[in-house]
Length: 164
Image 1 (cartoon, rainbow, N blue to C red):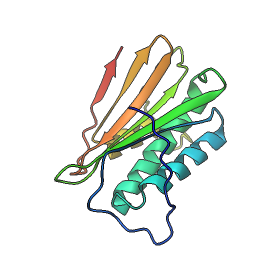
Image 2: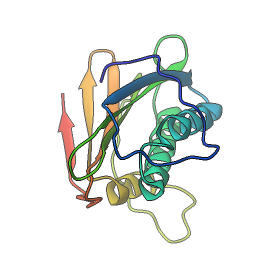
Image 3: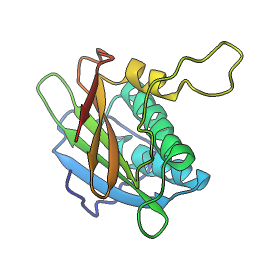
Image 4: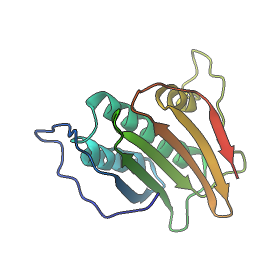
């Protein structure tokens, strides 16, 4: 994903556009619990007027999980940050959106865990898999990126793709 300095207009009087153009954003947030909140607000501000509200809710939920997991389970990138990027691509059937969260990596990569009904955590990647059309992990020498894609049909395919 490329990064652009696009600034949204906020959510007041939000209206979904049917003539969206391809857009990409990249923001850097603190490797701290506030990073997830900042990322959620930025994504919502940028996309509120160009994607349906149901899709926006799914995007915000998945982004919160991915940034929260990066803060809880992975090292930060240099400077104590996490990089968050998203891309909107219009298609005849509706917008396709990709989200990517890059951190400094961890000894054990992201994986789905079995969580008992009484467990207070362990469901994050199940939420991602349930809401996204597909998701996966890319690793390189600098860290790892966990990504999720949403296709216009909204059909979730809980397949994991690991590269690197």
